Image (tube, rainbow, N blue to C red; front, side, top):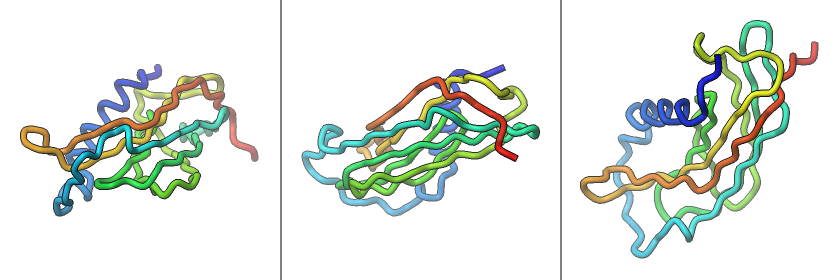
Amino acid sequence: MRRSAAAALSTAASVTLLSAPWAAAPAQAATTGTTPATVTATVTLDPTGTVDANGFVTISGTYRCSPLPTGVAVVASTLGMYTGATCDGAEHTFTDRRRPAREQLYTVGPTEVGASVTWMRNGSYPVIIQTTKIASDTRTVYLQAPAS
């Protein structure tokens, strides 16, 4: 059974926002006039991934984001990966290898996977952390057995 991409991202985002070490970091000064339109990014998933006999799934891809005026960026996948993004205008790679929960069993064959880059920065009351998805890619990735 495969969870929907939206459900996986929503659950992972909730857990990550509450438990991530940067969530308790000191506030950064806001930049006046900064809008999501001033920050750009792209993310692309590779067309193939792997799933081994123990249920570990590996997907990968690339991302690129412009320097951020404030806050941090995070690369996320529907498998549950959340990792800090380096926003310096250069292309970077990411890999997510994990064993999804029992209700998310994956098998060899096509599956829908998503990845995104999200910009997070301090908001003003009542929004403590303001988030903007600045890039996303959802596609059918063909999972294959790893090479021996």
